[in-house]
Image 1: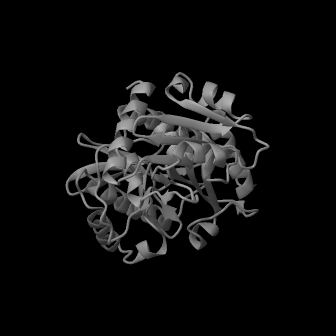
Image 2: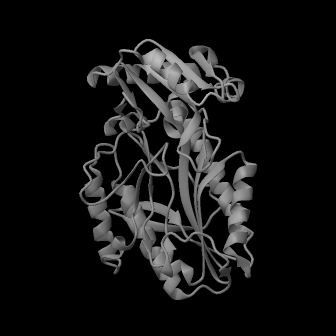
Image 3: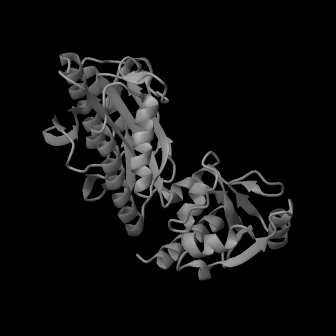
Length: 369
Protein backbone atom coordinates (compact mmCIF):
# COMPACT_ATOMS: atom_id res chain seq x y z
CA UNK A 1 0.00 0.00 0.00
CA UNK A 2 1.45 3.36 -1.03
CA UNK A 3 1.66 6.02 1.64
CA UNK A 4 -0.93 8.22 -0.05
CA UNK A 5 -3.33 5.28 -0.25
CA UNK A 6 -2.80 4.53 3.42
CA UNK A 7 -3.66 8.12 4.35
CA UNK A 8 -6.78 8.04 2.17
CA UNK A 9 -7.79 4.76 3.83
CA UNK A 10 -7.39 6.32 7.27
CA UNK A 11 -9.34 9.37 6.13
CA UNK A 12 -12.26 7.01 5.44
CA UNK A 13 -11.88 5.46 8.88
CA UNK A 14 -12.00 8.91 10.44
CA UNK A 15 -14.98 9.88 8.30
CA UNK A 16 -16.99 6.89 9.51
CA UNK A 17 -15.87 7.58 13.06
CA UNK A 18 -17.08 11.17 12.83
CA UNK A 19 -20.46 10.04 11.53
CA UNK A 20 -20.92 7.43 14.24
CA UNK A 21 -19.99 9.91 17.00
CA UNK A 22 -21.85 12.91 15.58
CA UNK A 23 -18.66 14.94 15.20
CA UNK A 24 -17.62 17.33 12.43
CA UNK A 25 -13.89 16.86 12.81
CA UNK A 26 -10.94 15.59 14.83
CA UNK A 27 -7.97 17.60 16.07
CA UNK A 28 -4.82 15.46 16.53
CA UNK A 29 -1.78 16.81 18.29
CA UNK A 30 -0.37 13.73 20.05
CA UNK A 31 2.71 12.06 18.57
CA UNK A 32 1.01 8.62 18.24
CA UNK A 33 -2.07 9.96 16.44
CA UNK A 34 -0.01 12.18 14.14
CA UNK A 35 2.15 9.19 13.18
CA UNK A 36 -0.86 6.93 12.66
CA UNK A 37 -2.80 9.28 10.40
CA UNK A 38 0.25 10.39 8.39
CA UNK A 39 1.40 6.80 7.78
CA UNK A 40 4.65 7.20 9.66
CA UNK A 41 5.27 10.91 10.17
CA UNK A 42 7.08 12.00 13.32
CA UNK A 43 5.95 15.22 15.00
CA UNK A 44 8.05 15.02 18.17
CA UNK A 45 10.88 17.32 19.16
CA UNK A 46 10.89 16.83 22.93
CA UNK A 47 11.35 13.17 23.83
CA UNK A 48 9.48 13.52 27.11
CA UNK A 49 6.32 14.99 25.62
CA UNK A 50 3.37 13.03 24.26
CA UNK A 51 2.42 16.03 22.14
CA UNK A 52 4.25 17.11 19.01
CA UNK A 53 5.05 20.37 17.26
CA UNK A 54 2.56 19.80 14.43
CA UNK A 55 -1.14 18.99 14.44
CA UNK A 56 -3.80 17.68 12.10
CA UNK A 57 -7.35 18.94 11.81
CA UNK A 58 -9.40 16.33 9.96
CA UNK A 59 -12.96 16.88 8.79
CA UNK A 60 -15.11 14.68 6.57
CA UNK A 61 -13.75 16.34 3.44
CA UNK A 62 -10.56 18.21 4.37
CA UNK A 63 -7.17 17.70 5.99
CA UNK A 64 -5.19 20.54 7.55
CA UNK A 65 -1.58 20.49 8.74
CA UNK A 66 -0.94 23.12 11.40
CA UNK A 67 2.47 24.11 12.72
CA UNK A 68 4.66 27.15 13.22
CA UNK A 69 7.11 28.76 10.83
CA UNK A 70 10.05 26.96 12.46
CA UNK A 71 8.71 23.49 11.69
CA UNK A 72 6.55 23.74 8.56
CA UNK A 73 9.21 23.24 5.89
CA UNK A 74 10.87 20.36 7.76
CA UNK A 75 7.59 18.58 8.51
CA UNK A 76 6.49 18.89 4.88
CA UNK A 77 9.75 17.79 3.28
CA UNK A 78 10.87 15.12 5.75
CA UNK A 79 7.95 13.84 7.81
CA UNK A 80 5.34 14.11 5.04
CA UNK A 81 7.68 13.41 2.17
CA UNK A 82 5.72 12.59 -0.95
CA UNK A 83 2.32 13.20 0.67
CA UNK A 84 2.48 16.81 1.88
CA UNK A 85 0.27 17.80 -1.06
CA UNK A 86 -2.57 15.85 0.59
CA UNK A 87 -2.81 18.46 3.34
CA UNK A 88 -3.79 22.10 3.35
CA UNK A 89 -1.20 23.98 5.38
CA UNK A 90 -1.85 26.48 8.13
CA UNK A 91 1.32 28.19 9.35
CA UNK A 92 1.59 30.59 12.26
CA UNK A 93 4.48 32.52 13.81
CA UNK A 94 6.33 30.80 16.60
CA UNK A 95 6.41 34.09 18.55
CA UNK A 96 2.64 34.44 18.53
CA UNK A 97 1.51 32.58 21.68
CA UNK A 98 -2.04 32.45 20.34
CA UNK A 99 -1.14 31.66 16.75
CA UNK A 100 -2.33 28.07 16.73
CA UNK A 101 -5.43 28.81 18.78
CA UNK A 102 -6.47 31.58 16.42
CA UNK A 103 -5.98 29.34 13.39
CA UNK A 104 -7.88 26.42 14.90
CA UNK A 105 -10.70 28.66 16.09
CA UNK A 106 -11.07 30.13 12.61
CA UNK A 107 -11.16 26.71 10.95
CA UNK A 108 -13.57 25.11 13.40
CA UNK A 109 -16.09 27.88 14.02
CA UNK A 110 -19.52 26.34 14.49
CA UNK A 111 -18.17 22.77 14.25
CA UNK A 112 -18.29 19.96 16.78
CA UNK A 113 -14.67 18.84 17.15
CA UNK A 114 -13.15 15.94 19.06
CA UNK A 115 -9.59 16.42 20.28
CA UNK A 116 -6.82 14.33 21.82
CA UNK A 117 -5.67 17.37 23.83
CA UNK A 118 -7.72 19.39 26.29
CA UNK A 119 -8.97 22.47 24.49
CA UNK A 120 -11.78 24.91 25.26
CA UNK A 121 -14.83 24.30 23.09
CA UNK A 122 -13.63 20.88 21.92
CA UNK A 123 -14.83 17.48 23.06
CA UNK A 124 -12.43 14.99 24.59
CA UNK A 125 -11.70 12.33 22.01
CA UNK A 126 -13.71 9.25 23.04
CA UNK A 127 -11.62 6.40 24.38
CA UNK A 128 -12.69 4.07 21.58
CA UNK A 129 -10.82 6.15 19.00
CA UNK A 130 -7.56 4.29 19.67
CA UNK A 131 -9.20 1.14 18.35
CA UNK A 132 -8.82 2.58 14.87
CA UNK A 133 -5.07 2.16 15.34
CA UNK A 134 -5.21 -1.53 16.29
CA UNK A 135 -5.64 -3.29 12.91
CA UNK A 136 -2.45 -2.69 10.94
CA UNK A 137 -2.44 -1.96 7.24
CA UNK A 138 -0.08 -4.02 5.02
CA UNK A 139 2.32 -1.07 4.98
CA UNK A 140 2.27 -0.82 8.76
CA UNK A 141 3.00 -4.55 8.99
CA UNK A 142 6.03 -4.06 6.74
CA UNK A 143 7.25 -1.13 8.84
CA UNK A 144 6.72 -3.07 12.06
CA UNK A 145 8.57 -6.07 10.68
CA UNK A 146 11.58 -3.89 9.80
CA UNK A 147 11.49 -2.16 13.16
CA UNK A 148 11.20 -5.39 15.13
CA UNK A 149 14.11 -7.07 13.41
CA UNK A 150 16.50 -4.12 13.68
CA UNK A 151 15.53 -3.36 17.27
CA UNK A 152 16.24 -6.96 18.21
CA UNK A 153 19.52 -6.90 16.31
CA UNK A 154 20.53 -3.74 18.17
CA UNK A 155 19.67 -5.06 21.63
CA UNK A 156 21.27 -8.44 20.99
CA UNK A 157 24.43 -6.79 19.64
CA UNK A 158 24.61 -4.69 22.81
CA UNK A 159 24.00 -7.78 24.95
CA UNK A 160 26.95 -9.57 23.37
CA UNK A 161 29.13 -6.58 24.22
CA UNK A 162 28.50 -6.77 27.96
CA UNK A 163 31.53 -7.04 30.20
CA UNK A 164 31.46 -7.85 33.92
CA UNK A 165 32.07 -4.66 35.86
CA UNK A 166 30.01 -2.42 33.57
CA UNK A 167 27.47 -0.20 35.29
CA UNK A 168 23.84 -0.32 34.26
CA UNK A 169 24.34 3.20 32.88
CA UNK A 170 27.16 1.84 30.68
CA UNK A 171 24.85 -0.87 29.36
CA UNK A 172 22.03 1.61 28.76
CA UNK A 173 24.39 3.77 26.72
CA UNK A 174 25.51 0.74 24.73
CA UNK A 175 21.92 -0.22 23.87
CA UNK A 176 20.99 3.36 23.01
CA UNK A 177 24.00 3.67 20.72
CA UNK A 178 23.15 0.50 18.82
CA UNK A 179 19.51 1.53 18.44
CA UNK A 180 20.05 5.12 17.37
CA UNK A 181 22.72 4.07 14.84
CA UNK A 182 19.91 2.23 13.07
CA UNK A 183 17.69 5.31 12.94
CA UNK A 184 15.44 4.06 15.72
CA UNK A 185 14.40 5.94 18.86
CA UNK A 186 14.49 4.18 22.25
CA UNK A 187 11.43 5.06 24.32
CA UNK A 188 12.01 2.62 27.21
CA UNK A 189 15.40 1.32 28.33
CA UNK A 190 15.59 -0.76 31.51
CA UNK A 191 18.72 -2.50 32.75
CA UNK A 192 19.24 -4.69 35.80
CA UNK A 193 22.46 -6.23 37.01
CA UNK A 194 22.67 -9.13 39.45
CA UNK A 195 20.55 -8.60 42.60
CA UNK A 196 18.48 -5.77 41.05
CA UNK A 197 17.02 -8.37 38.68
CA UNK A 198 15.03 -9.92 41.51
CA UNK A 199 14.36 -6.73 43.46
CA UNK A 200 12.69 -4.59 40.78
CA UNK A 201 10.45 -5.38 37.81
CA UNK A 202 11.03 -1.92 36.26
CA UNK A 203 14.75 -1.38 36.89
CA UNK A 204 15.70 2.07 35.66
CA UNK A 205 19.48 1.99 35.03
CA UNK A 206 21.71 2.97 37.93
CA UNK A 207 25.37 2.88 39.00
CA UNK A 208 24.83 -0.74 40.06
CA UNK A 209 27.33 -3.14 38.48
CA UNK A 210 26.68 -6.04 36.17
CA UNK A 211 28.92 -8.92 37.22
CA UNK A 212 26.93 -12.07 36.45
CA UNK A 213 23.23 -11.75 35.57
CA UNK A 214 21.99 -8.94 33.34
CA UNK A 215 18.57 -8.08 31.94
CA UNK A 216 18.06 -5.69 29.02
CA UNK A 217 14.56 -4.34 28.32
CA UNK A 218 13.76 -2.12 25.36
CA UNK A 219 10.79 -0.45 23.70
CA UNK A 220 11.80 1.36 20.51
CA UNK A 221 9.97 3.55 17.99
CA UNK A 222 10.17 4.42 14.31
CA UNK A 223 7.37 5.78 12.07
CA UNK A 224 5.34 6.06 15.28
CA UNK A 225 5.22 2.28 15.71
CA UNK A 226 6.77 0.65 18.76
CA UNK A 227 8.20 -2.82 19.33
CA UNK A 228 9.38 -4.31 22.63
CA UNK A 229 11.68 -7.10 23.75
CA UNK A 230 13.71 -8.37 26.70
CA UNK A 231 17.01 -10.26 26.65
CA UNK A 232 18.82 -11.87 29.59
CA UNK A 233 22.57 -12.48 29.81
CA UNK A 234 24.75 -14.47 32.21
CA UNK A 235 28.53 -14.33 32.58
CA UNK A 236 30.07 -17.67 33.55
CA UNK A 237 28.47 -20.88 34.74
CA UNK A 238 24.75 -20.20 35.00
CA UNK A 239 23.05 -21.40 38.20
CA UNK A 240 20.44 -24.12 37.78
CA UNK A 241 17.78 -21.97 39.44
CA UNK A 242 18.05 -19.39 36.66
CA UNK A 243 17.88 -22.11 34.01
CA UNK A 244 14.75 -23.53 35.65
CA UNK A 245 13.10 -20.12 36.00
CA UNK A 246 13.80 -19.17 32.39
CA UNK A 247 12.22 -22.40 31.19
CA UNK A 248 9.22 -21.69 33.41
CA UNK A 249 8.75 -18.11 32.23
CA UNK A 250 9.23 -19.23 28.62
CA UNK A 251 6.33 -21.65 29.10
CA UNK A 252 4.13 -18.86 30.41
CA UNK A 253 5.16 -16.62 27.50
CA UNK A 254 4.44 -19.40 25.01
CA UNK A 255 1.04 -19.87 26.63
CA UNK A 256 0.28 -16.19 26.05
CA UNK A 257 1.35 -16.52 22.41
CA UNK A 258 -0.56 -19.76 21.90
CA UNK A 259 -3.86 -18.26 23.02
CA UNK A 260 -3.46 -14.87 21.32
CA UNK A 261 -5.58 -15.45 18.24
CA UNK A 262 -8.02 -13.26 16.30
CA UNK A 263 -11.40 -13.23 18.03
CA UNK A 264 -10.09 -14.32 21.41
CA UNK A 265 -11.03 -12.27 24.48
CA UNK A 266 -7.92 -10.90 26.17
CA UNK A 267 -9.22 -11.81 29.64
CA UNK A 268 -9.36 -15.48 28.61
CA UNK A 269 -5.79 -15.30 27.32
CA UNK A 270 -4.71 -13.85 30.64
CA UNK A 271 -6.46 -16.56 32.64
CA UNK A 272 -4.69 -19.23 30.57
CA UNK A 273 -1.38 -17.59 31.47
CA UNK A 274 -2.36 -17.48 35.16
CA UNK A 275 -2.92 -21.23 34.97
CA UNK A 276 0.47 -21.61 33.27
CA UNK A 277 2.18 -19.83 36.16
CA UNK A 278 0.58 -22.31 38.52
CA UNK A 279 1.51 -25.25 36.30
CA UNK A 280 5.24 -24.36 36.42
CA UNK A 281 5.17 -23.90 40.19
CA UNK A 282 4.89 -20.13 40.52
CA UNK A 283 1.23 -19.45 41.30
CA UNK A 284 0.48 -15.80 41.91
CA UNK A 285 3.79 -14.61 40.46
CA UNK A 286 1.83 -12.73 37.80
CA UNK A 287 0.64 -10.36 40.53
CA UNK A 288 4.12 -8.85 40.87
CA UNK A 289 4.28 -7.26 37.42
CA UNK A 290 1.93 -6.46 34.58
CA UNK A 291 2.05 -9.05 31.82
CA UNK A 292 1.99 -6.77 28.78
CA UNK A 293 -0.69 -6.58 26.13
CA UNK A 294 -1.40 -4.93 22.80
CA UNK A 295 1.38 -2.77 21.35
CA UNK A 296 1.34 -0.40 18.39
CA UNK A 297 1.54 3.39 18.46
CA UNK A 298 1.97 3.23 22.24
CA UNK A 299 4.35 1.00 24.18
CA UNK A 300 1.13 -0.68 25.29
CA UNK A 301 -2.13 0.28 23.64
CA UNK A 302 -3.68 -1.53 26.58
CA UNK A 303 -2.46 -3.88 29.29
CA UNK A 304 -4.18 -7.23 29.68
CA UNK A 305 -5.65 -8.54 32.89
CA UNK A 306 -8.13 -11.26 33.88
CA UNK A 307 -11.14 -9.01 33.44
CA UNK A 308 -10.13 -7.58 30.05
CA UNK A 309 -13.00 -7.39 27.56
CA UNK A 310 -10.85 -6.44 24.56
CA UNK A 311 -10.85 -8.85 21.66
CA UNK A 312 -7.79 -9.71 19.55
CA UNK A 313 -8.20 -8.47 15.98
CA UNK A 314 -6.34 -9.23 12.76
CA UNK A 315 -3.67 -8.14 12.12
CA UNK A 316 -2.55 -6.76 15.47
CA UNK A 317 0.69 -6.67 17.45
CA UNK A 318 1.14 -7.81 21.06
CA UNK A 319 4.02 -7.78 23.52
CA UNK A 320 3.47 -10.11 26.45
CA UNK A 321 6.14 -9.88 29.15
CA UNK A 322 5.74 -12.50 31.90
CA UNK A 323 8.40 -12.53 34.61
CA UNK A 324 9.44 -14.83 37.44
CA UNK A 325 11.65 -13.03 39.95
CA UNK A 326 14.58 -11.78 37.81
CA UNK A 327 13.78 -13.89 34.75
CA UNK A 328 11.64 -12.45 31.99
CA UNK A 329 10.52 -13.36 28.47
CA UNK A 330 9.30 -10.79 25.97
CA UNK A 331 9.00 -10.29 22.22
CA UNK A 332 6.65 -8.44 19.93
CA UNK A 333 4.39 -10.72 17.90
CA UNK A 334 2.10 -10.06 14.96
CA UNK A 335 -1.20 -11.93 15.15
CA UNK A 336 -3.29 -12.47 12.02
CA UNK A 337 -5.67 -14.96 10.45
CA UNK A 338 -2.59 -16.81 9.19
CA UNK A 339 -1.20 -17.37 12.69
CA UNK A 340 1.52 -15.42 14.44
CA UNK A 341 5.00 -14.13 13.69
CA UNK A 342 7.66 -13.01 16.15
CA UNK A 343 8.66 -9.57 14.91
CA UNK A 344 11.65 -9.18 17.24
CA UNK A 345 13.43 -12.41 16.38
CA UNK A 346 16.76 -12.45 14.50
CA UNK A 347 17.54 -16.20 14.68
CA UNK A 348 20.87 -15.23 16.30
CA UNK A 349 19.80 -15.66 19.92
CA UNK A 350 19.57 -18.92 21.93
CA UNK A 351 16.03 -20.24 22.13
CA UNK A 352 14.06 -22.51 24.43
CA UNK A 353 11.75 -25.05 22.80
CA UNK A 354 8.37 -24.99 24.55
CA UNK A 355 5.31 -27.15 23.93
CA UNK A 356 1.80 -25.87 24.64
CA UNK A 357 -1.19 -28.04 23.81
CA UNK A 358 0.90 -30.09 21.42
CA UNK A 359 2.32 -27.09 19.54
CA UNK A 360 5.98 -26.09 19.70
CA UNK A 361 7.16 -22.54 20.32
CA UNK A 362 10.59 -20.92 20.55
CA UNK A 363 11.12 -18.37 23.28
CA UNK A 364 14.33 -16.48 24.14
CA UNK A 365 16.79 -18.22 26.44
CA UNK A 366 19.54 -16.67 28.56
CA UNK A 367 22.69 -15.88 26.59
CA UNK A 368 25.82 -17.19 28.35
CA UNK A 369 28.89 -15.04 27.70
